[in-house]
Length: 495
Image: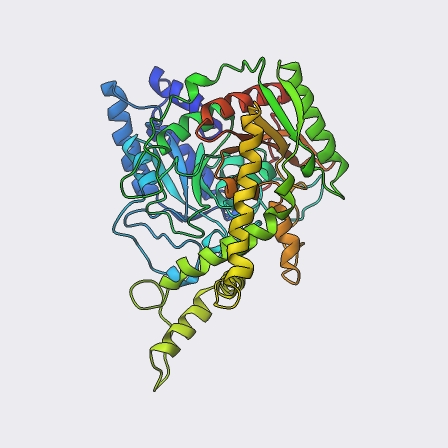
C-alpha cells in the first residue's frame, strides 16, 4: 500500500489488525512525509529513532493479539506536552534546552497504548495566540492555499503545528490543547476534526500551564471516528492532577451510531454577530438543516451573557498566565540571560524574562499582573469570575430545558494570511476566539467538524457544544453532521 500516511486512525488500526500493513511501514511513510514538508514548519523536534523503536514494539504487541486501539498508530505531540528526554519548549525561548525527566500523563497514556510518537509539533508560544505566529520556531504554515494565490496562510492557533500536520497527512492524528479555542479554531481552519473534552476529562499533569482553570488537552484527527478512538486513550482519572475527574471513560467509538432522532439542538441567537460573513451564516443555517434532516429538533435558545465572554476570558486567562509564568525566572531550568558585572538577582530575573518571552506572552503577563494588582483585583479579576459563573449558568439553564447540544460556527472567518493581522491591534486577533471561549469558561465539551468550503476554496467548520461529561453523545451528533456534510476536500500539495 502506498501513501500509508494518508490513512486515518480507524483505517490504519484495521489494516494493522488484518496484517495488511505493519506499524514500521506506517511510521516510515509518515517520517518520509515529514522530511518532505519542512516548508510547513509543523514538526519542530523530529524523533525518528523513538518512532521506529515504538513501531517495532507495537508490531510485536499486535502479533501477540493484546493490542489496544491506538497501538502502532503514528501521531504527533504538541510541544506543550512534556516528553521524557525530548525537548519540550512550549515554543518559547525561555525553555531553550529543557528536556524533561518525566512524561506528561496524556502522552504516557498514548505511549502505554502503543501509539508511535513521530516528534513534537509547532504551536504559539505558551499556547498564547490564534495564528501560530508567536512561536520561537517561526510560523507554522497551513497546507491550504486560497485559489491560485501563493500567500502563506495560518493553520490557526495555538495548536497550529498539530492542525497543519494532520491536514497535510504528516501524521495520522495529533494531540492539541484548548484554552480558548486552540483545538477547535485550527481544526476549522484546516478542514480536520478537533474536540476539547469537558474540563477535568484529561489530565493536565505534565502539560506546560497557560491558564490552569481553562486548559484542556484533546485530539486533532482526520474525522470524528478517529477523534473518538484517540480521545478514549487520552482520558481518565489521574491522582497527580487535582482537577482530574474520577469518572469511568466510556467506549466513545461504540457510541457512534449516527442516530440523533429526537435530539434537541439549540441555536443561540447571541452568536449572530454584526458583520459575520454571509458564507459563515449560510454554513450555520445549512448545518442546522442537516441535523434536522437527520431527525433532530432545532430550537432557538438564548445565552444572554455571551457578549461578556471575550472580555472575561481576556482578564481570567492572562491573570492565570501571569501567575503560572512566574516560575520561569532563569534560576532552575531553561534559559538564563548573560549578566553584566555587578548585576544582582533582580537584574537576572528582568533580563531573562525580557529576552526569554515573546511580545504576546509579555503582553498577557503584564495584563494579568495588572488585573491581579491590589487596586484592580475586584474591578477586573473578581468581576470577570462572576461573569464566568453567569456564562456557565446560561449553559446549565439551556441543558436543563432539554437541549442536548448547541450548534454554532467554529470561527468568524476562514483562515487568513500569515502577517495579515498586525501586532498593532491585538484585539483583532483576539476576536478569532469569539465562538470558542464560552466553552472553556463553562468547562464544557466542544467539537469542530469541517462542513464546507468558502468561495476561495478554504475549509469552514461548525462547532457543536455538549453537556458536561457527555463527549460520547456529542461525538455521535458530530458524526451525524459529518455524514450529512460529506466534507472530503484535501489541500493540493505545494510544499
